[in-house]
Image 1 (cartoon, rainbow, N blue to C red):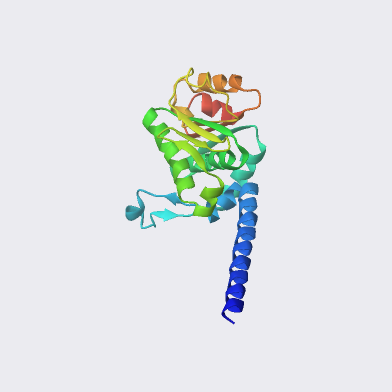
Image 2 (tube, helix red, strand yellow):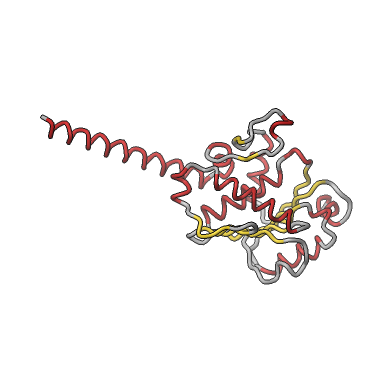
Length: 221
């Protein structure tokens, strides 16, 4: 009788394990198909100003209607200029896109911004998204290495942040290039052109708060 109960227990455990693996495979495929679903369901952002704002420190990416329009544009546009206000989480959205594409599609995303400390902050967004995933997702999409300015996935995906300067991008050949706060980057046009010349099929994404100059001119075209 004990042997029969033990065999039955093993069968039930095996069934539960198999069901869990099947569910994880379905969830992983849903994440692969939809970066916004991943951000809003299977990972979280962190808010250093949470106490002053009366919010939770760690929370899923918010569900705002304009995010679906933005992520649809990210998925379909090879060239995208995005004006933003501070509270629209547009830089977060760009890093969700870059991190998702690196994790599931082996993309090489380069993010360029004004200064090195800001570049490190943007990599911090990507690290936060990776770190706040459940363990089974991190096990399925393991990192090979990471530091203050770069994340490398074991299967080939990569997110790299660099400071401003038109020559910073010349040695890289990204599949995604994100220029953050480019209205306030004096050499934004030169950086953009250098990235565009670095790879024939690179997706070009420019994000910035409003400001006069090259970025504003491009948004009006």
